[in-house]
Length: 314
Image (cartoon, rainbow, N blue to C red; front, side):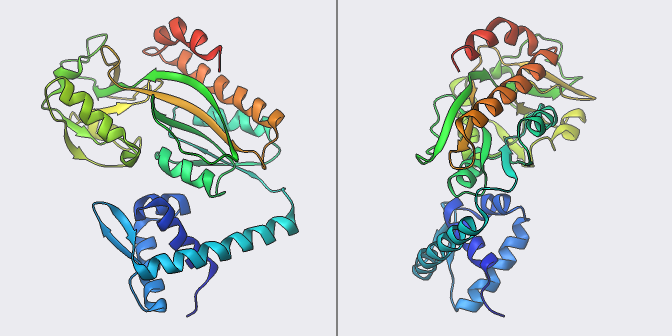
């Protein structure tokens, strides 16, 4: 067996993402599959490429050497492919998990000649994929004050400067009858960890909970949207984006005082989308999100009061 391009891409993805889980998401494969592939590469090169621990996946001396050479090779390969194929091909569009994803894709099909959609709960993963050219455009959710750290070749427009984060809890929960929930009243609950925890959302949750006197008990970790059955069964609560409509057995409520807020940003690679295309896609993103906000019985009052003002300067 010899080294292949896919091996180099995998090693670079791990090096760029700093963790196997984020790299696996970027590559569209499972983490066990990526671990197996990495072990094969390590056998081929005769040594360990990454040390894995709390700090993530840190390159060894051999790993740093391989990363340097692999990146150069991949840059040359991508440049060769671009020269031969031009700028055609489908636009790869990424998005955090939102209720409006289906409506957004329908709008993108109208705005772009050819588009594929990649949904990733990790904003860090989306930003890395954009920076590395694996995505052409994306809608990313970050903490209100967060910095995406994108390179100069990636344009950015704020879709919504901030929206509150809501809570999903069992429909039969003692707090579900309230119009809004005090975060302090959720002390002692079992939590589903926020998706994309490496983005800082878990840190934000813990900080907000500490501010009202408790430490959240994270009992479940699972992909975005996968916690609904646990919530409906009365086993957990979870932070959700405000347009979420929950589902059978799940109630979505605002958190009093909006202790956690997020910003929605549309980003695109300037060599893949013209300004005119980017402007149209931006309008479609805002339109899809606005429609979903107005369709949400819980979020609609907030959006009707503030949405127009917040998005008028976007």
